[in-house]
Picture 1 (tube, rainbow, N blue to C red):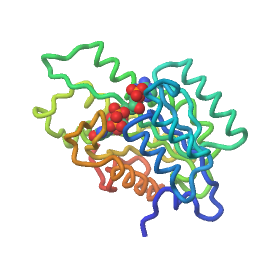
Picture 2 (spheres, helix red, strand yellow; picture 1 turned 90 degrees about the vertical axis):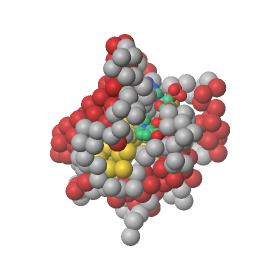
Picture 3 (cartoon, rainbow, N blue to C red; picture 1 turned 135 degrees about the vertical axis):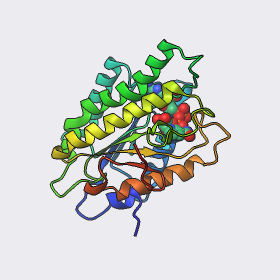
Length: 263
Ligand code: NDP
Protein backbone atom coordinates (compact mmCIF):
# COMPACT_ATOMS: atom_id res chain seq x y z
CA UNK A 1 0.00 0.00 0.00
CA UNK A 2 1.30 3.45 -0.86
CA UNK A 3 1.40 5.87 2.02
CA UNK A 4 1.11 9.61 1.55
CA UNK A 5 3.91 11.51 3.30
CA UNK A 6 1.70 12.68 6.13
CA UNK A 7 0.38 9.16 6.69
CA UNK A 8 3.97 7.97 7.01
CA UNK A 9 4.60 10.79 9.49
CA UNK A 10 1.73 9.62 11.63
CA UNK A 11 3.01 6.06 12.07
CA UNK A 12 3.03 5.08 15.73
CA UNK A 13 6.18 6.04 17.60
CA UNK A 14 7.15 8.51 14.88
CA UNK A 15 7.48 12.17 15.82
CA UNK A 16 5.00 14.39 14.07
CA UNK A 17 7.89 15.78 12.16
CA UNK A 18 9.26 19.19 11.25
CA UNK A 19 9.61 20.18 7.62
CA UNK A 20 11.36 23.09 5.91
CA UNK A 21 10.49 24.11 2.34
CA UNK A 22 12.44 26.74 0.38
CA UNK A 23 10.76 28.99 -2.19
CA UNK A 24 7.33 28.37 -0.71
CA UNK A 25 5.49 31.58 -1.62
CA UNK A 26 4.30 30.33 -5.02
CA UNK A 27 4.22 27.40 -7.40
CA UNK A 28 5.26 23.96 -6.24
CA UNK A 29 6.66 25.20 -2.92
CA UNK A 30 3.39 26.89 -1.93
CA UNK A 31 1.42 23.77 -2.83
CA UNK A 32 3.79 21.57 -0.83
CA UNK A 33 3.13 23.71 2.23
CA UNK A 34 -0.62 23.78 1.53
CA UNK A 35 -0.95 20.00 1.25
CA UNK A 36 1.28 19.29 4.24
CA UNK A 37 -0.66 21.75 6.41
CA UNK A 38 -4.06 20.48 5.27
CA UNK A 39 -3.25 16.86 5.98
CA UNK A 40 -5.10 15.06 8.77
CA UNK A 41 -1.77 14.79 10.64
CA UNK A 42 0.16 17.92 9.74
CA UNK A 43 3.83 18.13 10.61
CA UNK A 44 4.41 19.75 13.98
CA UNK A 45 6.16 22.69 12.34
CA UNK A 46 6.21 23.57 8.65
CA UNK A 47 8.89 26.19 8.07
CA UNK A 48 7.59 27.87 4.94
CA UNK A 49 10.50 29.96 3.75
CA UNK A 50 10.67 32.58 1.03
CA UNK A 51 12.56 35.69 0.02
CA UNK A 52 9.87 38.25 0.83
CA UNK A 53 7.33 36.94 3.34
CA UNK A 54 6.08 40.47 4.09
CA UNK A 55 5.76 41.78 0.53
CA UNK A 56 3.03 41.30 -2.10
CA UNK A 57 4.74 38.08 -3.29
CA UNK A 58 4.25 36.56 0.15
CA UNK A 59 0.51 37.25 0.37
CA UNK A 60 -0.76 33.79 -0.63
CA UNK A 61 1.60 32.21 1.87
CA UNK A 62 0.59 34.64 4.64
CA UNK A 63 -3.08 33.88 3.96
CA UNK A 64 -2.34 30.16 4.16
CA UNK A 65 -0.33 30.54 7.37
CA UNK A 66 -3.23 32.44 8.94
CA UNK A 67 -5.35 29.28 8.59
CA UNK A 68 -2.78 26.80 9.89
CA UNK A 69 -0.83 27.26 13.13
CA UNK A 70 1.68 24.62 12.01
CA UNK A 71 3.01 27.00 9.32
CA UNK A 72 5.83 29.28 10.42
CA UNK A 73 6.86 31.92 7.89
CA UNK A 74 10.60 32.41 7.69
CA UNK A 75 12.53 34.83 5.49
CA UNK A 76 15.13 32.93 3.47
CA UNK A 77 16.94 33.98 0.33
CA UNK A 78 19.00 30.90 -0.45
CA UNK A 79 21.81 32.87 -2.07
CA UNK A 80 22.21 35.42 0.71
CA UNK A 81 24.41 34.30 3.61
CA UNK A 82 23.02 36.74 6.27
CA UNK A 83 19.51 35.66 5.24
CA UNK A 84 20.46 31.98 5.63
CA UNK A 85 21.91 32.72 9.08
CA UNK A 86 18.76 34.65 10.08
CA UNK A 87 16.59 31.73 8.95
CA UNK A 88 18.70 29.31 11.01
CA UNK A 89 18.09 31.44 14.12
CA UNK A 90 14.36 31.76 13.42
CA UNK A 91 13.92 28.00 12.91
CA UNK A 92 16.01 27.14 15.96
CA UNK A 93 13.92 29.42 18.16
CA UNK A 94 10.84 27.31 17.31
CA UNK A 95 12.51 23.92 17.45
CA UNK A 96 14.37 24.29 20.73
CA UNK A 97 15.74 20.74 21.21
CA UNK A 98 13.76 19.12 18.42
CA UNK A 99 15.43 18.00 15.20
CA UNK A 100 14.38 18.73 11.64
CA UNK A 101 12.97 15.77 9.71
CA UNK A 102 12.66 16.95 6.15
CA UNK A 103 14.35 19.69 4.13
CA UNK A 104 12.85 20.28 0.68
CA UNK A 105 15.18 22.38 -1.48
CA UNK A 106 12.54 23.59 -3.89
CA UNK A 107 13.66 27.19 -4.62
CA UNK A 108 14.89 27.44 -8.16
CA UNK A 109 15.16 29.69 -11.19
CA UNK A 110 14.88 28.86 -14.84
CA UNK A 111 16.67 30.42 -17.76
CA UNK A 112 16.26 29.97 -21.48
CA UNK A 113 19.44 30.54 -23.45
CA UNK A 114 20.83 29.21 -26.67
CA UNK A 115 24.54 28.93 -27.32
CA UNK A 116 24.18 32.23 -29.17
CA UNK A 117 22.23 34.16 -26.52
CA UNK A 118 24.07 32.77 -23.50
CA UNK A 119 25.12 35.42 -20.97
CA UNK A 120 27.79 34.47 -18.44
CA UNK A 121 26.40 36.57 -15.56
CA UNK A 122 22.94 35.09 -16.07
CA UNK A 123 24.41 31.60 -16.08
CA UNK A 124 26.33 32.24 -12.85
CA UNK A 125 23.20 33.63 -11.23
CA UNK A 126 21.24 30.47 -12.14
CA UNK A 127 24.04 28.34 -10.68
CA UNK A 128 24.05 30.48 -7.53
CA UNK A 129 20.41 29.64 -6.81
CA UNK A 130 20.04 26.11 -8.15
CA UNK A 131 23.38 24.70 -7.02
CA UNK A 132 25.10 26.88 -4.44
CA UNK A 133 21.87 27.89 -2.66
CA UNK A 134 20.73 24.28 -2.37
CA UNK A 135 24.07 23.21 -0.96
CA UNK A 136 24.42 26.17 1.44
CA UNK A 137 20.96 25.65 2.94
CA UNK A 138 21.65 21.92 3.34
CA UNK A 139 25.05 22.59 4.89
CA UNK A 140 23.66 24.74 7.69
CA UNK A 141 20.84 22.27 8.49
CA UNK A 142 22.73 18.97 8.45
CA UNK A 143 23.24 18.78 12.22
CA UNK A 144 19.59 19.58 12.84
CA UNK A 145 18.58 16.83 10.42
CA UNK A 146 20.99 14.41 12.10
CA UNK A 147 19.15 15.14 15.35
CA UNK A 148 15.89 14.06 13.70
CA UNK A 149 17.44 10.85 12.34
CA UNK A 150 16.74 7.54 14.02
CA UNK A 151 18.77 4.38 14.11
CA UNK A 152 16.28 2.24 12.19
CA UNK A 153 17.13 3.08 8.59
CA UNK A 154 16.50 6.04 6.34
CA UNK A 155 13.15 7.70 5.64
CA UNK A 156 11.60 11.11 5.02
CA UNK A 157 9.81 10.97 8.35
CA UNK A 158 13.17 10.61 10.17
CA UNK A 159 15.67 12.78 8.30
CA UNK A 160 15.85 13.64 4.62
CA UNK A 161 17.03 16.18 2.08
CA UNK A 162 14.93 16.30 -1.07
CA UNK A 163 16.21 18.39 -3.95
CA UNK A 164 13.64 19.40 -6.53
CA UNK A 165 15.32 18.72 -9.84
CA UNK A 166 14.16 18.30 -13.43
CA UNK A 167 14.32 15.75 -16.21
CA UNK A 168 15.89 18.53 -18.28
CA UNK A 169 19.00 18.20 -16.11
CA UNK A 170 19.39 14.51 -16.85
CA UNK A 171 22.56 13.90 -18.85
CA UNK A 172 21.37 10.35 -19.51
CA UNK A 173 18.13 11.55 -21.14
CA UNK A 174 19.40 14.80 -22.71
CA UNK A 175 15.78 15.58 -23.58
CA UNK A 176 14.69 18.02 -26.31
CA UNK A 177 17.90 20.07 -26.41
CA UNK A 178 17.04 21.83 -29.65
CA UNK A 179 13.37 22.37 -28.79
CA UNK A 180 14.13 23.76 -25.30
CA UNK A 181 17.52 25.50 -25.40
CA UNK A 182 18.29 26.13 -21.74
CA UNK A 183 22.04 25.81 -21.19
CA UNK A 184 22.15 27.55 -17.76
CA UNK A 185 19.10 25.77 -16.33
CA UNK A 186 19.98 22.29 -17.59
CA UNK A 187 23.63 22.54 -16.54
CA UNK A 188 22.69 23.89 -13.10
CA UNK A 189 20.24 21.07 -12.47
CA UNK A 190 22.80 18.48 -13.65
CA UNK A 191 25.20 20.01 -11.12
CA UNK A 192 22.49 19.98 -8.46
CA UNK A 193 22.00 16.28 -9.22
CA UNK A 194 25.68 15.65 -8.53
CA UNK A 195 25.27 17.51 -5.26
CA UNK A 196 22.39 15.17 -4.39
CA UNK A 197 24.47 12.07 -5.19
CA UNK A 198 27.38 13.30 -3.08
CA UNK A 199 25.12 14.26 -0.17
CA UNK A 200 23.46 10.83 -0.28
CA UNK A 201 26.85 9.16 0.11
CA UNK A 202 28.16 11.53 2.77
CA UNK A 203 25.02 11.86 4.90
CA UNK A 204 24.04 8.20 4.95
CA UNK A 205 26.17 7.57 8.03
CA UNK A 206 24.34 10.39 9.83
CA UNK A 207 21.03 8.65 9.05
CA UNK A 208 19.96 11.25 6.47
CA UNK A 209 18.27 10.19 3.25
CA UNK A 210 18.91 12.29 0.11
CA UNK A 211 17.12 12.12 -3.22
CA UNK A 212 16.27 14.22 -6.26
CA UNK A 213 12.72 14.50 -7.55
CA UNK A 214 11.36 15.71 -10.88
CA UNK A 215 7.91 17.24 -10.32
CA UNK A 216 6.70 16.76 -13.92
CA UNK A 217 6.00 19.67 -16.24
CA UNK A 218 3.78 21.73 -13.97
CA UNK A 219 1.54 24.76 -14.48
CA UNK A 220 3.38 27.39 -12.43
CA UNK A 221 5.07 30.67 -13.28
CA UNK A 222 8.11 28.64 -14.29
CA UNK A 223 6.26 25.80 -16.01
CA UNK A 224 3.86 28.24 -17.74
CA UNK A 225 0.21 27.72 -18.65
CA UNK A 226 1.27 25.34 -21.42
CA UNK A 227 2.28 22.68 -18.90
CA UNK A 228 0.00 19.64 -18.78
CA UNK A 229 0.16 18.98 -15.05
CA UNK A 230 -1.77 20.82 -12.32
CA UNK A 231 0.37 21.75 -9.33
CA UNK A 232 -2.02 19.96 -6.91
CA UNK A 233 -1.57 16.72 -8.84
CA UNK A 234 2.21 16.99 -9.02
CA UNK A 235 2.56 17.73 -5.32
CA UNK A 236 0.22 14.90 -4.29
CA UNK A 237 2.48 12.61 -6.30
CA UNK A 238 5.67 14.06 -4.82
CA UNK A 239 4.41 13.61 -1.25
CA UNK A 240 3.39 10.03 -1.98
CA UNK A 241 6.83 9.31 -3.43
CA UNK A 242 8.51 10.87 -0.39
CA UNK A 243 6.60 8.52 1.90
CA UNK A 244 7.91 5.54 -0.06
CA UNK A 245 11.61 6.46 0.13
CA UNK A 246 13.93 4.30 2.19
CA UNK A 247 17.54 3.20 2.56
CA UNK A 248 17.23 1.48 -0.82
CA UNK A 249 16.08 4.59 -2.67
CA UNK A 250 18.37 7.14 -1.05
CA UNK A 251 20.66 8.59 -3.71
CA UNK A 252 18.15 8.08 -6.51
CA UNK A 253 16.47 10.41 -9.00
CA UNK A 254 12.72 9.85 -9.25
CA UNK A 255 9.81 11.58 -10.89
CA UNK A 256 6.56 12.62 -9.16
CA UNK A 257 5.05 9.23 -10.03
CA UNK A 258 7.93 7.30 -8.49
CA UNK A 259 9.59 6.31 -11.78
CA UNK A 260 13.35 6.10 -11.69
CA UNK A 261 15.26 8.57 -13.93
CA UNK A 262 18.82 8.36 -15.21
CA UNK A 263 21.20 10.94 -13.83
P1 NDP B 1 8.21 29.12 -9.70
O1 NDP B 1 8.99 30.01 -10.61
O2 NDP B 1 6.74 29.13 -9.78
O3 NDP B 1 8.66 29.38 -8.17
C1 NDP B 1 10.01 29.42 -7.86
C2 NDP B 1 10.15 29.65 -6.37
O4 NDP B 1 11.55 29.69 -6.05
C3 NDP B 1 9.55 30.98 -5.94
O5 NDP B 1 8.98 30.84 -4.67
C4 NDP B 1 10.78 31.89 -5.88
O6 NDP B 1 10.64 32.98 -4.99
C5 NDP B 1 11.77 30.89 -5.31
N1 NDP B 1 13.15 31.35 -5.41
C6 NDP B 1 13.87 31.66 -6.51
N2 NDP B 1 15.09 32.08 -6.16
C7 NDP B 1 15.15 32.03 -4.81
C8 NDP B 1 16.12 32.34 -3.84
N3 NDP B 1 17.33 32.81 -4.16
N4 NDP B 1 15.82 32.16 -2.52
C9 NDP B 1 14.62 31.70 -2.16
N5 NDP B 1 13.63 31.41 -3.02
C10 NDP B 1 13.91 31.58 -4.32
O7 NDP B 1 8.78 27.65 -9.97
P2 NDP B 1 8.14 26.21 -9.69
O8 NDP B 1 7.31 26.24 -8.48
O9 NDP B 1 7.59 25.72 -10.95
O10 NDP B 1 9.49 25.40 -9.44
C11 NDP B 1 9.88 24.90 -8.17
C12 NDP B 1 11.03 23.94 -8.39
O11 NDP B 1 10.61 22.90 -9.28
C13 NDP B 1 12.26 24.58 -9.04
O12 NDP B 1 13.43 24.09 -8.44
C14 NDP B 1 12.18 24.13 -10.50
O13 NDP B 1 13.44 24.08 -11.13
C15 NDP B 1 11.54 22.76 -10.34
N6 NDP B 1 10.86 22.30 -11.56
C16 NDP B 1 9.71 22.89 -12.01
C17 NDP B 1 9.07 22.41 -13.14
C18 NDP B 1 7.81 22.99 -13.68
O14 NDP B 1 7.32 22.51 -14.73
N7 NDP B 1 7.19 23.99 -13.03
C19 NDP B 1 9.61 21.29 -13.88
C20 NDP B 1 10.80 20.71 -13.31
C21 NDP B 1 11.37 21.21 -12.19
P3 NDP B 1 10.26 34.50 -5.51
O15 NDP B 1 8.77 34.55 -5.58
O16 NDP B 1 10.84 35.37 -4.45
O17 NDP B 1 10.90 34.68 -6.85
